[in-house]
Amino acid sequence: MEELKPGKPVTANNVTLIPIERISINSKEMNKGYWIAAQKEPYAIILRDSKWSRAFDMEGNEVSMEYLAQVVTDLDARTNVEIL
Image 1: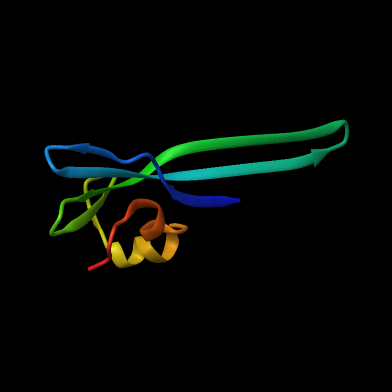
Image 2: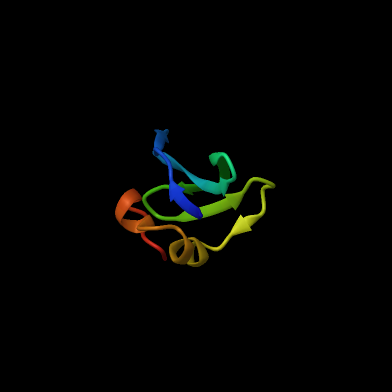
């Protein structure tokens, strides 16, 4: 299972930074038991102020806000980010 979720927003100088995190959970049943592994890693960051919102991946490339709105669960409700 893999999911993209917004992290805890941080505001500095009227700019809000919203991390987007990738959560991966894997599991497997084996002969003598069951294993599970979970990983949380940065995926992108959203920068927003009162007039604009922009997102960038971890390499610094711009990511479409429309794309993030489609793939991040409840992005607008969780972060108050309007997709312009």
